[in-house]
Length: 458
Ligand code: NAD
Image 1 (cartoon, helix red, strand yellow):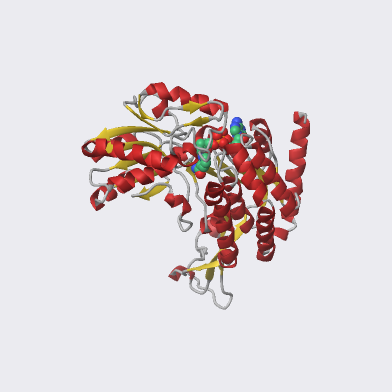
Image 2: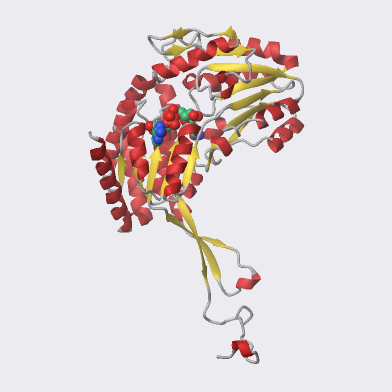
């Protein structure tokens, strides 16, 4: 399609949604619940196609695809369906003495027309999970999936076409140019998941219309293994979290700091665990592939930037890279300056926790942080001194699956959060309303003109 044609198509779609929102149809909870049901039914109808698309685009196996994508979305849908009526009710707040006689409530109202831009790494989950919040809060939605996972993008369009009329929910497929054209339009809320670089572009585009945003971005998530950690479990959980999705997880441990007293033992254990869980990666059928040739080239260029302790094998034909641990990496090298987003794990050692805190605080605020220690004092110190989006003590990744927690970044790793009830809140404006009594009227607040003053005489 010609670019002007794309732009006018996008403009028309957005205008159609704007008109539909103005009818007020999306405001009733019954309507929102039916839309969530239609979405769930359409996903169920397309479930096989979603599995196939995830296999083709990323070589994701069924179990992996269910746990991290489809099952995750079903969970969010089920909880939202159960809780929506309660969430959508106005919430009464306390009445201070000054307001005696009145009642105050927070009313949750939809923003209006929402745009969701999604990445490729969990291309189904990260597109649909925010949509659930947007619908639950009573908004219309435009979804722009990633062009790097074209099969998932197509199935998402089919799911939307089955579930919704385009005046309520529509998928616009395409690359960065299409995304830029969509961003020219005025939306009432933008929810973006992707890189920090593009997050800045989205934020600027949103600023032109004063549109509020949630930015779910990336970054380098540190992992600390202290001297007193349960090393075996640490190695097992770090290996799982790092090499799941071949390291292409926004909250994957990016690098590890291990206490020097336990360094050798930890390195031995993580090698064992990497092999036990993922084999040599490249030769394993179920191991996830790198999303594109250019990402594989980027990751391959990191390999000479330190010592490879194990791994390092690359199969260009299947686009796979083995689970890899590297040591002696210069912190100034691209490997340690850029988000790795692949199966390479640099490991450093430290003597004092303070060194690690200084190292992390000298960089952008990370999306996640993982700390392995039995010491409450060390836990407290790290939580108190380091700002990060969210994370785990003695585990990796699991905070993303704890739906009672908000999930999101801070600083360079983003702003805002979602999941569970936080998704509803993210897509709702909180309108504070005082309803006063007319049965009596306290006189104190009113100005009294001084009738003796010559300035106040009429
Ligand atoms: P990306 O920023 O390249 O692309 C994300 C989306 O933005 C895609 O839909 C893409 O088409 C669009 N886009 C690309 N360039 C654009 C431009 N110039 N203008 C407008 N839109 C544009 O990110 P990606 O490579 O798809 O995903 C990987 C990144 O996402 C990593 O940094 C990762 O950490 C991050 N991520 C964050 C989270 C989170 O929840 N915080 C989750 C997954 C991924």
